[in-house]
Length: 173
Image (cartoon, rainbow, N blue to C red; front, side):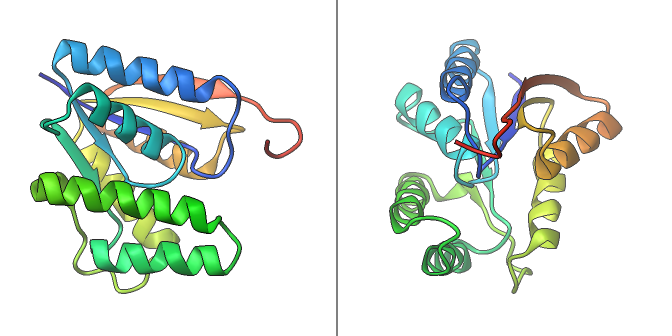
């Protein structure tokens, strides 16, 4: 069994990305591989959702958060209040993570030391994701900075990388 990190955009999307992520996750589950992800919207959410459908007992799953689950919930509610994401998106993600935590609390890997959730805590989370992984599958839109950081860290570690590249000319859909 391998631990495979799935990483990609939380903000932008393209028509084929959800299908590509779901197909990749189903193939992983069929092989018996584990999923490592970051518990964010977008690619992380889709990968985790597909994993739950394919593996209802939620075994072989690790979700690294940039903070505690409690702080992360508050952070997403605040981001919705700020208009960065919708309230529906915040509730959708909070619900997913809460349900998974209730089923198997060991799946959620919290960062008890991060008081502020910012770029630094997100990039630290990426390091932990790559440290826990044997392989990376990246879904990168317009060379996004966070996904590129994940790819760079995987390259430095020397693990196998599979990159799905997408381009949005208008900055988002």
